[in-house]
Amino acid sequence: MNARTPRGLLTGLLRAVRTYPRRSPLTFGYVLLLLLGHVWVEDLLTAERADALRDHISTNLDNLHDHPVTALFGSALLFDGTLTEILTTGFGGTLITLGLGVCCCLAWTERRFGGPRAAAVFLGGHIAATLVTAAVILLSLRQGWYPESVRQASDYGISYGAQTVLALATLAVPRWARLPWAAFVVAWPLSGDGEWPGPLPDFTTVGHLLAAALGFALAAGVALTAARRRRAGSLGPADLHR
Image 1 (cartoon, one colour):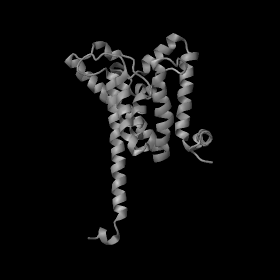
Image 2 (cartoon, rainbow, N blue to C red; image 1 turned 30 degrees about the vertical axis):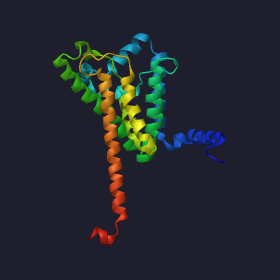
Image 3 (cartoon, rainbow, N blue to C red; image 1 turned 60 degrees about the vertical axis):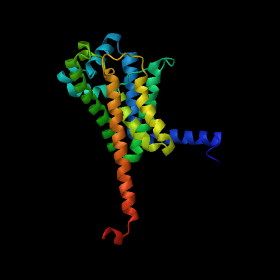
Image 4 (cartoon, rainbow, N blue to C red; image 1 turned 45 degrees about the vertical axis):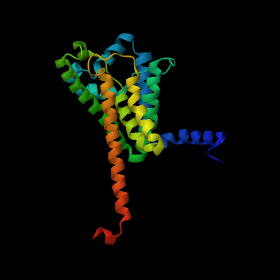
């Protein structure tokens, strides 16, 4: 059967879904954890307890100073979006971060580099972007670019880690599509309607751009390493000893 026909595409899609847990067990488990956490917070907790939990795991300056480990890792266990309000920007963000970022790009990263490295890339992007963004916020507060209320702002979710693997997945798309893909990764955080409080965009946009920069840097490093190995493999023993 030709894989390009509609029936062939459907067969391939069903096969990919069926084998997904086996091929990407770490990502599959993480997606289940995120979905269970979302249902727990949105449907089982009272509104007051849900808000208190979100406030506690937000990676704002006050929480990073008071309980940094809980904030950094707790914020990666919930996604800030919706699964039901499909006509909202929140659902669009869920499609990009949870759907495209975690379900697709993190799964590709796991298959390409293995589970431990995939986890390191995702968590590394989440933590690094959060901490550098915190430094940017501190600098901006000193310059008067951000209001003081940003210290207690709500900021939790998987989007920084998702943004990192979205950028890394530039390696997974065809060469002709890499520039449009990279443009999409950079553009979607800038597409919101929030106003810039000063010379910098809002801090969440800064965090997404930093996470993307980290992912692109990792992609460039992987590509350069692969190119060196190909060049080394094309040289014969006599060439290597000249």
